[in-house]
Length: 339
Image 1 (cartoon, one colour):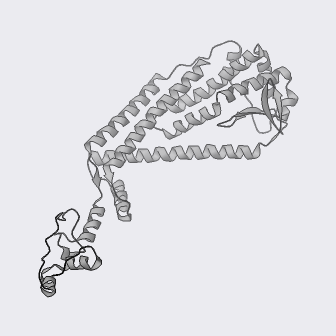
Image 2: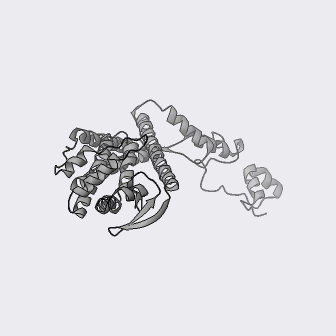
């Protein structure tokens, strides 16, 4: 079904634009503050992040950094939740055997309730319960397997995972969640089309859906989507693209990209003050005098070494040579020729 493929491409395109804009914003925020790997620099960076300087530039950096961190946290949380659900499914749904239906390998799970589904991200497999094998005839079973085989061939579980994570992470683009719901519905209709084509008509699939719906399941209400029934009756699914939501999402992504570009170009990289202060305290005092610290500050150090007084007695040489040079001679940094 072309509608499902178009919705998939549109969802991925909008999500990719949002991801690129967010990544650009994170780059602009990180570029605005340059710091070294030290505890003082990290604390200074946190202080700047929590209490930014007044002005549009620091506020933009804080906003872009907050958005980037929020998007990353939401994406990781969604991935972890889906991964745990998949692992829990793999632990509980243990196949008891396999059967071949219409040339497809089908895994059988022990359950009296009629169930059929496609699961797995990289290599999706078709699962049916023992109740499905007992309640459906051969034609109905082949239609159900053809439906699930279409999901497996197109890797619909992985596609749904991608659009779901994008919809939850990019919370500032509401059209992604709307597209995810519509893609899930159109994916089912596309699988129904494949089952109808494989069975030669809609009757086997419709009969199988009725059997699934009529089987009582304790605590569960089984329903059939009206769009799927209308499609089996020959009606095309009617759905209009939410132009307003799509336009709003594109405007939001464009504004985010422009804000990141303006921040990256307007705010030059700066270094945390705590790092410079720490280096100054290690290399010398404010005036750069070696006698007031452990040495000359790297920014104020004279690249040309001072001439050493030669041809003097050791006593006169020790009196006239600065103590810092004598210390360097002791540690082996400077070699002074004797008289």
